[in-house]
Length: 199
Image (cartoon, rainbow, N blue to C red; front, side, top):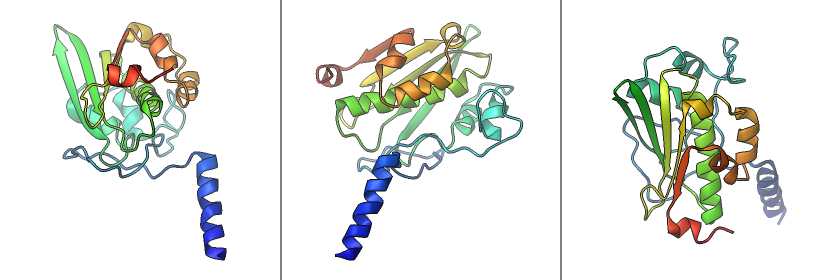
């Protein structure tokens, strides 16, 4: 009985602090996991004295601002942002000198359609903050997949809009309110399997 009480207290403490699991850096060979593994959590990055644009940013994030926008450099900058099985892939396209970056993600644990929208909105905010550090990135699209619908939610933003965003405030807002990022985005899409069940 005492062990059950201790376990209950530990789970209650974890729930109260928002701790849902450890973040794990994606690998180049990551594939979607049909079974939930870890709940998403904000990225874990090592502190770096040189990082000025993002508090506590690690070297990969800080260095990305000055690197060529390639698939490898984008994936390196985003290591640690996704739990195991959540990262689907990245696409980098240079079309007439305009650089488009697309990130595809599938949350590993989803409690409801609203939870899905919040997770996609919050991950979008974290990823866009990093990618738009690089002046060469012109457009970022973040796609959230469900197990049954690819691109169930998509959020797109241009550099012009990104330069006006207060990322710290937006990250705080999107932890509970997916609409905060949608209100700023250049465009967004929600499949009716999600939007029909949101208030």
